[in-house]
Amino acid sequence: MKKLVTLALINPISGTGKQKGIANRLKTHLDKDKFILDVRETEYAGHAIELSKEAANNGVDVVIAVGGDGTVNEVAQGLLHSNTAMAIIPCGSGNGFARHLGISCSPFKAISQLNSMVSCLVDTLQVNDHLSVNVSGVGYDAFISHEFAKMNSRGLSSYIRAILTSYFSYNDRNYTLTINDRREELQAFMVSFANSSQFGNNAFIAPNASLQDGKFNISVIKKPRWFEIPYLTYSLFMKKLDKCGIYNSYECDSCIVEQSDTILHVDGEPVESDSVLKIELLNKSLNVMVPESMKQIV
Image (tube, rainbow, N blue to C red; front, side):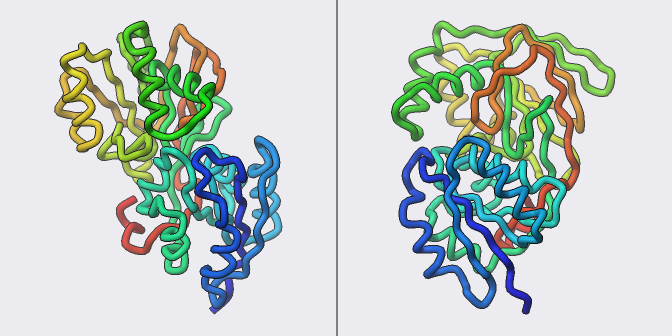
């Protein structure tokens, strides 16, 4: 069996610190009969894009993204439309894309999984000039991502704190969605573009989303009244958002969204954007490594 030439890209400042010691673990526990391993650390924002693209051009078989959703996004950008597969060892605070793929959020278990993973092609999203592999959006979640980025600590508790400090002052915004030449004006608290099923931490914004069906999900949520929050939260984590009266969704392969704001989050990372967004699905554009049991259901 041909050994897979493999490059592990480690983000040394990933939010949770789980990446510490990963290099040695990889060298010790990655199957040497299957992988020929090289390890590098990223040094600045965008470095993983450069290193991944270089690896793909040089015929590397697998690039392992060791970090959070931002690191995964950068590696995906470098490997888009190439034959090189992306593997993930999740070390972030949400790890939404990895969770959807069935990859353990224990870095050490993820290494063990990698020894028996297989590759498959999945869809990605283009949001104006930004690539999205997981969930992007406008509205309250984009606002929170910008606030979360300013905080000194990461993790679910910090994210919840960011939500609680701004919820009462943030209200529904006006949006126009154009899907298949049909324009719809609406008010929403948040509008999410979901390629996979969840934000992270098993919070499912699009419970039925698939990475291989040639469509993405647009999830629209109106601002919940205070007494609706517990049920909304329950529904988010129990994959039952479609039971909520303040939730609506669409499926499509392209969409134009017009908003009054210019903030956006792409896979949880805050970015500035235009007020008009064009979201397009890139069908089977990224090769990823997944547990064999997940190959047909991602």
